[in-house]
Image (cartoon, rainbow, N blue to C red; front, side, top):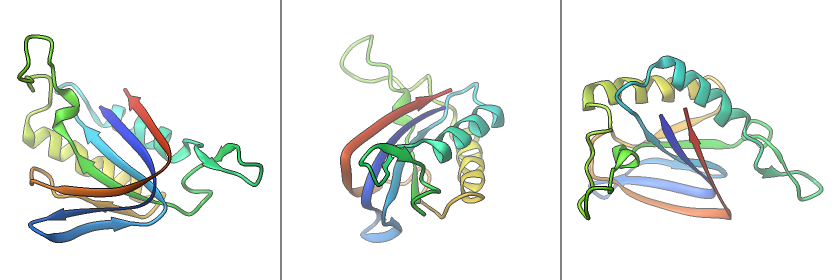
Length: 144
């Protein structure tokens, strides 16, 4: 699994001009699933994401987790995180999980995250418009 984590002041995702997910302070996370990923990889990344300390404390040091600041997650499925551009200019996505498996693991990941912090989601497989205000900017790549 691959995650692109962006610390945000706010973020929203729209499908067909309708807001389907919206958060204030927290993380907007793009979630990619590989063909060999299992709940084991998802569990590892849930723990890593929830405990990641990139929010500033009273001394302006990145020392607080999303739980510490009572933040929220906006989780968006993103198969293009597995794009392979090594063979030319048109990306190949053969390294991404098939849709059924990807959706199942994405939903599992969302459910496990929601056990710790409030979660909003995009719509799996839909064309989505994502708007965010990156704070910092802070962007972290997590992979397992």
